[in-house]
Length: 364
Image (cartoon, rainbow, N blue to C red; front, side, top):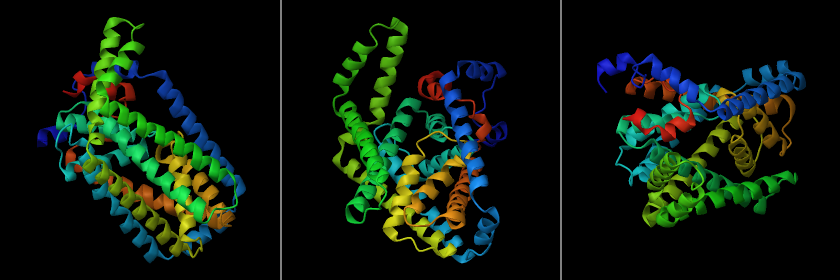
């Protein structure tokens, strides 16, 4: 990207009219989800303020060993290039992309997740990569969906392993693991069907859109084909194995962050318990929330550590400390990536999911 493009904001629409048209096309459903997420976050924050001794929480955080906190922050950096490698592997059937580019765009997506509601950071990075690499946003987003599916499968796998070896007493953990396991298993099977049986998947889509107007039906079928291209990595055993291996390594490293923060606060949760906390948090964050997952993040961590007898001020202090590591380092990395690529979050914050997937002309 040229210096002129950097100064002009990179992805900003050149015409104010285009921006207003995008806002008009933004689906109301997306706004409802975003508002619901904000309401949930606010509700949990209010509950936290009323239910926890904030002075004790502050004292616990003030007594934290900053050396262990710094170690946790540095450890949080390690998965980024692994995530970049995994995304490059998934993108290979669409277009070869460097690990550096994939890592930077992923970091920008993390920044966007921290400032936009409803996990729109994933949509943002699909949009950014499509613009940067001149590829279909639909195919780009399909690879991101695959990332999330494999993340879910690996986390559920870790979760179920702990439940078999050393299960906590709360019965709801089994229900959560089984339900999410079914969801992600169905998702990966559906993705594999589209990848391996693209012609049949297209015929099924053609049958389903038959009642729709011809122009809309053709647009949806074109979208299905672009999504299928983003799923082609599943047709390669080597690529699939690489993605699975990267996903396992990512979540092993993620668990290490929890272990370092625990050491900083002097808690005594077993390692398998930290895996459960990580799983509860990761699976629970699929729910909508305010930007940065404020409130929802803390509520999920508190629910997880409560399974191992950590309650009250230490539970909230642990949740806040883990969140601080995720938010601060993720935002910093995203800001650096945005600066390197000449991007600003406000340039894409009005892009709705439907636009990022369907309005291919705006990405050229």
